[in-house]
Length: 179
Image 1 (cartoon, one colour):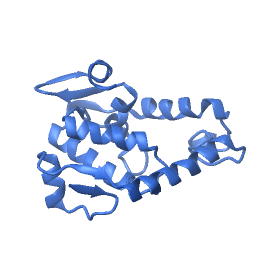
Image 2: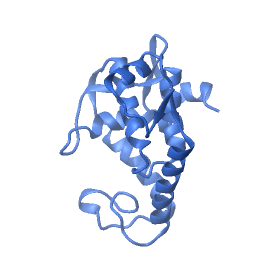
Image 3: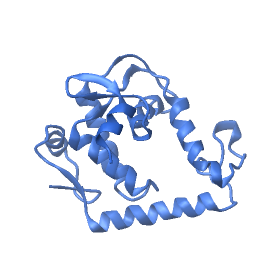
Image 4: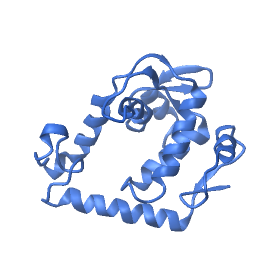
């Protein structure tokens, strides 16, 4: 068992998770840190102070405050607008490794992500239902926003996933498999 957020993630452990020989889990303490951080984000979203990316637009719209009722839609639209990758999918194993690395980083308890997001990412890894990420495309200075957007589209029922030996619509797979 690998304890996300508290165990050191080595290349060997990441490869064991990738191969299904090691399972990632969230400890009670890690879960508490994730919830505390998420509660901060929820408080910000309910407030009136402009905090970039939580209750404001992005880029030139960084001073435009979004109504608290629309912050969920803001996040959804951010994922959809940055999903601009093209070309063939990267290898399924590489997408899965990206999920493993991201869930480990998010489980540190600093991002403000909801516990449900961590749970869903772990479910994708453990069920081997892996997001399809196109091989080309970047947005932003770091160049990773388009691949990351594609990586997380299935969390909102969009995009495509590798399932068994085929590529399928994420929404359909989630309807069949996610309670």
